[in-house]
Image (cartoon, rainbow over all chains, first blue to last red; front, side, top):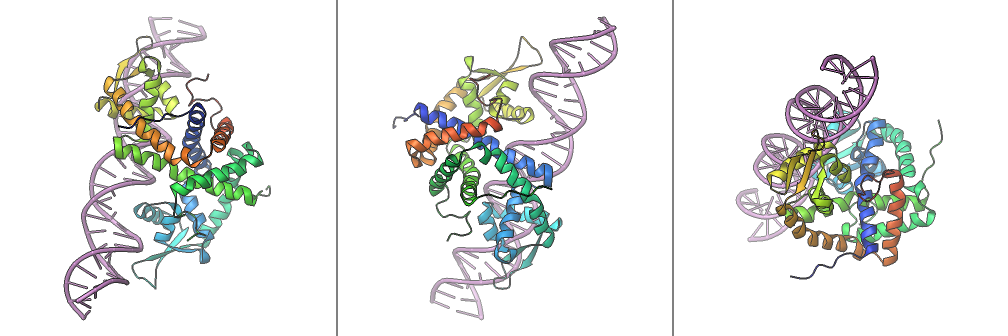
Length: 160
Length: 160
DNA sequence: GGTGATTGGTTGTTGATACAACTAAGGTAG
DNA sequence: CTACCTTAGTTGTATCAACAACCAATCACC
């Protein structure tokens, strides 16, 4: 059995604080969206990914990859969002196993309505608390972490 | 209606990456603990907070504050952990509304067994991907974010 | 072109969390 | 001491997500 290498004081301090951020920030992000727009952060992100897709259209499995969702989870969320009139499901002509998901006009309006409040929340919770240098550092740190967390870049539409 | 101030390229890039980390890292932390120790990260954190408390004892509501849990959530988790023999609930003598939660010997053993693997996971997912400077930066950035996210320092036992 | 393996997506079931209602104990004012 | 408010914790109910089982369509291969 190998000896555990514990953390230095500096590592310990950074990790404890960062872990607290991981715990608190997602909840704070969700809170504003559910309160102001009756959308979960996942709902919002799903609609946002569709809004950025060419033709506001993605296949279900492609949308699942971008949102980091399992297919069962996305399936039920889409059923609800479809019922609310924000998305529409249509069979894919090219591959009849697949389903195309499109953002409806109402869905587009919803994203447009929700985005400013969400961005303002991101500003007030994150960006406004940091110096420009720290924002750049955070980008570099996050990129470094993503090389192990998301080596394929699944969550980034522009890549691969 | 005020005009929305959108994000600069630098802000946008940093935020998109950081948001992906917020999505992926907690799941990766949970995965190792559930796979290797059959503990959720919340279970582990709960036991860890108890293990660091004087006498391995905390009142339920104090434990809830340190773990950022609602009382109902903690109540049910404690019921399960009690059934597994890791914690014990005893009435508080001083205030008979309150309940003291103590870490049993089995619970202590569990934390001792689980900690090395968890720490190793934190290393491989976070610390090893960063330079010493970046670790220091991450600590400072997290501290800055916590001034708005957790102004009372609820999650830090040492403070107020 | 038929057989078997794979992929795309939905649904059954179970465990987990939130909100709200509830019980019980403690504090406070008359 | 009694009525009322607050605090500590548990439990009822509904929603959400995960895993697994399932159906349907496509592909690989002979």
